[in-house]
Image (cartoon, rainbow, N blue to C red):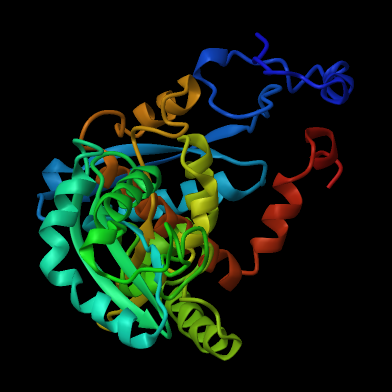
Length: 386
């Protein structure tokens, strides 16, 4: 099945005429909404799990086993994540909770002086209800939660914060904010002395790593945690629970010295792999890059408890690439396809990322990390000669 190429140039025809792999796919051309579409790039997908999980507040009898589709070309990733899932599941599983869900857009307004910029900022609280009326008229799924102005010299940046239903909401927030700004704030009769306007002035941190994504989540805010007994750690991970704890504490010191953004082992491997498999906006992974892995060890019971916090996961179960057949099936594997499942998707991503962090930290402690990659990345015929 060939994808449509509108107004194909001679140069583009020359580039694509001999392609065989990229053009071999089963995607419905009418469902593709990109420019100069020529085909699809297939990414291998494997299943990690099963992982025993339950929402915080539910009983252990309400736990469920879940698998996660990981789209990746990296050997050892799925095997390691699955090992972490096994360890957690044998110790009672992982609990999860989502804490908030927001999406932002931060337009900037230009003025002749800081006096005018400050006067405009003072008008924001009284205008919020009217801004909400105009913004929410663009979508029945969108709700304006708050507007917050920040004055920078002769400019005022206004943080529009939304709830966006089952969509990630970047486009919804953009369209709603633009409508509110054009229809209300840019009205010359309002006497606000605005000299210029851009729908995004850079303060939202859109598609960038930013401390703002920790203090003001942009996406779903999620946390997952679970405990590992010493017996399970020794049998499944090859070392004691205390050894893993010591390794994590030592790594915290080093990452602080290096100025690492947050603290964790490698959760973004799982986040990215599930983003690709389920049709998320993969560029948004950078907004999720800050995460915090917190270890706690009980000297008496030898139980290690790990929690992983990711404040910003801009995910969706509608819109973007989630409507495509393979991506929709990937969501169904996780029981995340359908209304009201966005928070569940973010929570499960965090849970599987925690499982990977556990396994990888154990592999570092037992000095098996390198060997695992040497063995699993080789072709079958090469492994026989090791």
